[in-house]
Length: 139
Length: 139
DNA sequence: CGGCATCCGTTTTGATACTG
DNA sequence: CAGTATCAAAACGGATGCCG
Image 1 (cartoon, rainbow over the protein chains, first blue to last red):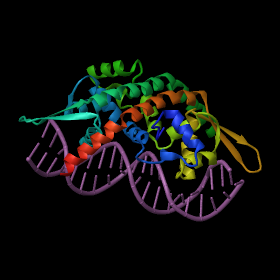
Image 2: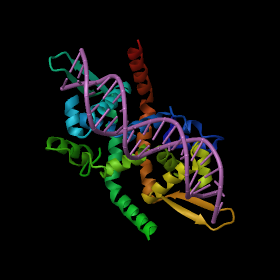
Image 3: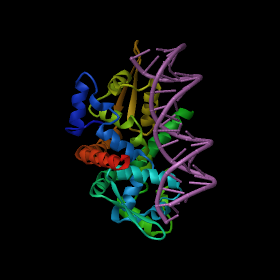
Image 4: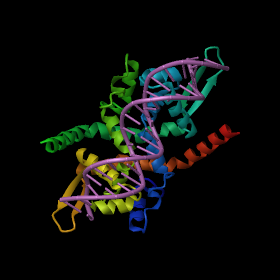
């Protein structure tokens, strides 16, 4: 994808037949940007964790495990900037901040699930292929 | 997702109610592995470029643009190892190597397209959100 | 509790030059 | 043409310590 403005594959095809590759490289390309988010280590997990309700910073850390606060903050800030989550600050004595998916954030669950389903369905083929490849390379 | 073996969200939910986070962190988790591939800079592009036919190394470079040969080779080797592409070597005078999607590679197009479609459909909301966020942060 | 600042190690990506 | 080898830069994730 990368680019894919008018339509996923059709657009790509159009680019390939053209002289250059369109925004295929434009780092600001929509799809590239989305891919970058999905590719990072925690965003997808956060989306799924928040999929059925808001959570506090510490709760997220608890479920994510070994993630440094700095990194989680970066992830959440980026997601907030992208409009995927909302940050609710409660003026309480022990500070409290809730993170919740926005409508946009919720809509991301579907495509993410598609990737998850694919992974789930084909992981065996992948590991088998890897094993086979490694065998031929080693000997 | 990460993990998501029995079913995307249901599985995640099960983990959250449990004591720990299951394979949520296991780097070898199927979904995590797939996400890593999709998250890298060129794999998705290669899948799409090969979606309607084999291509040679140089052709791919031409369409991808500013990618160092070393990097493209790494990408293609990894994809080959994962069983996403096949490498066909022709014993010709000017060396020729064709890369083609395997059945597994083709099946990846669908989920990737789902992400692409989502990006395409929501990019405006994202950029708008970013602009709004940046504005509030700057002033 | 939430999270910013700083420093650091690893991984990823790239530029360049050279070869079967 | 299709890489490989080497070197360098950068992005990313993480550890630690301090603060409102």
